[in-house]
Image 1 (cartoon, rainbow, N blue to C red):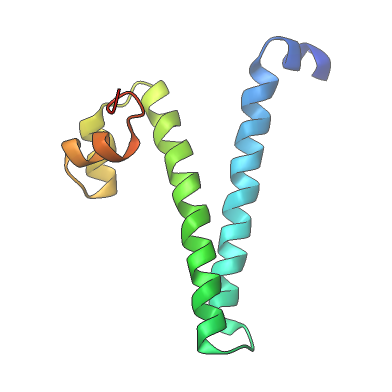
Image 2 (cartoon, one colour; image 1 turned 120 degrees about the vertical axis):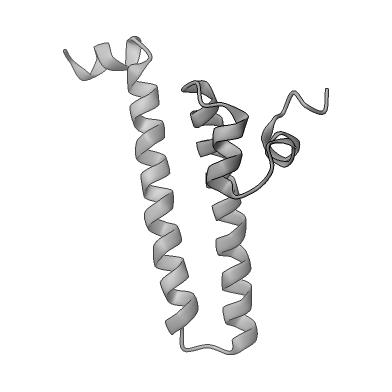
Length: 98
C-alpha cells in the first residue's frame, strides 16, 4: 500500500501521531537528563524541570485519551496512574465537566 493510501485511509494520521508522541517522549528524556547535567544554576535547572513537567502532562493526557479510545476502563487507567477512578475521570475526562 502506498504512503498516500495510508494517509487517505486515516491510518497514516494515527501512525504520524504515534511518531509525534515518540519524538516528544525522546525530547522529554533528553530534557530530563539536561535537568541533572546542565551547567547552570539550580534556579535555571528548576525552570527546565518545570518545562519537562508541563510537556509530560500533555503527553500523559494524550496517552490517557489513546487508552480510553482503545477500550481501557477508567479503573484500569487510574490503576496505572496510581490514583482513584474518580480522580482519573476528574483530571482526564473532558466530558466529565459538561
